[in-house]
Length: 357
Image 1 (cartoon, one colour):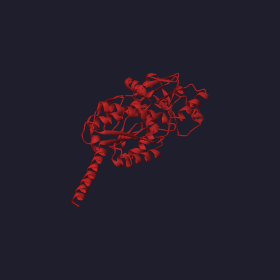
Image 2 (tube, rainbow, N blue to C red):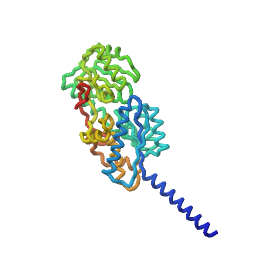
Image 3 (cartoon, rainbow, N blue to C red):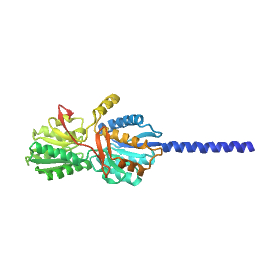
Image 4 (cartoon, rainbow, N blue to C red):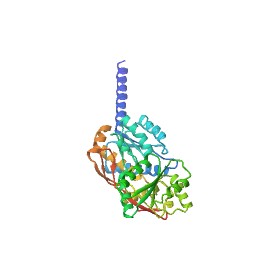
């Protein structure tokens, strides 16, 4: 009887110890939950983004040895806000994500309230003001206001006096449009017309005809695939030669040749070292958002590796703001008080289907 009690006591102790070890192991694994377009039209963004984040985690663990384990969990939101809400709810409730990452303005803005509600740090990669949606939200993207400054400055240097606007009416498109309008208001360039369109628009001929009635020197537009291709293809079919300019739009298309002979403003550019490393590991070039996603993973690992205990959400946020000036593959950046990672805008040209600096 005594022996039975003895061995029974040891069994219970072992079970308790195993449970404690399991809990400890779970606590030491930092889960980075990612909601991104892994299928559909915008998989051209999501798939290289996923590869960039895996590459970052591999390299970060070498640069910042840590007792903690890190795990990436990806969910496909197809660039749809309602699906992003569902995927992030799953990442929070089932995968116990410590940090959330989203790609794009519509999804980032949809997820921001969830991050704030659940007090989970959220990194968006978006033109919209994801970082301004509460202290748990950050945005790793060159803000539209900096892109608009460079756009208008360059247009003035080219002697442009009148401009017409054609804009995709969604969070990202309107964030870019509003920044451009604000900057134009301080310049000598006059807006002579404006047209909005929604996702799913297929006929841009009427929009082009209305726009050109005002005889602008240049047409500024914001569009994503498939509207980007339709807008420019119908411009060609109508024989329109008025120059076009944009912010970012050719990056979201597999047919940038439709923008041949024109320039656009881009967010910060990838470093040459990152492009080389990415090509070596994946056999392809990084795409838009790839470098931002890489930098986000590096930042998460770097911060957490400095501490023995897994940081709370509030501690993690404080650690980011405690060192606002950092460097990544997207260049030097400063994290402002709203959580926006401020990087420099750049100008790129499209020649023979190639995007060049």
